Length: 358
Image (cartoon, rainbow, N blue to C red; front, side):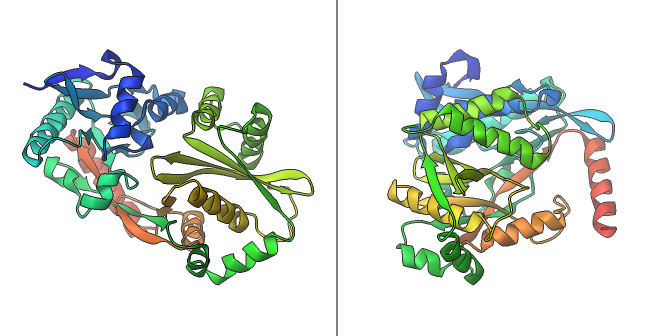
């Protein structure tokens, strides 16, 4: 019989070794990311509820799961989520049969339901990892719907870096290609990985992040953990300099054969001759390609209001900008499972009102 264990019952090394071997897992499943998300928002009082399934002494599957106290209309509501957004799907051992896979998944989602009842959870948010190997081979539908989740899928953009550089440039929007060429006349881009990152360089990113945001947005520990990601090889930092000073710094997470555009900070006071990000992103793509990374996810694609997503004009502009770097738009299969009927009713009433009155 499969055995249920808490995340704390094994070492982080054992958890992460499993993630490396499982085609279902990407960086969002690892102990590094779980620790970062635990520390991200102190006001959410985030608690670790991740667990794993053992079968005959081996890990058969893991389920990253974090509990958050989210304020909704002045009331605290408990979510299973990463921050206030979708958590990540369970990851199973590659070698198990299809029949066994179905049985273990059913077991995992039954445990989630039990934990939701024990912890007075009103809503579970979950999505599939688009950069995982199994998404590319079996990502044709939203299997979360089979376990009581309502569909809340959006889209993302993924660039296949196996193409040659001319093809990658050709796939880009004309304006981006122009700004890349012009940017080469003014800017220099440096890539910092585990071999050459220094705390001084990272501190410049942190300072620029605060300056661009206009305030300190996250606890210091989260920046320390991001620096640790670079040191461990699960992130890189790209810095664009102009007149000898870094005015644009971008952090990209890397894991297995995929990379994700995670964070960017541009100096809001810098007077620049050409937009920064086109050349910065191109140099990142070149570095990733040269380092054996095949897929680069540039992030969320939003096109207008959905009942579960209301992008601002800024969000839509960011999506449009990111699409300009080429790549394929693919679904991010996501779901939301409501455990509280009154909360479900209130949530959808508010969504309908908002949708009808943009």
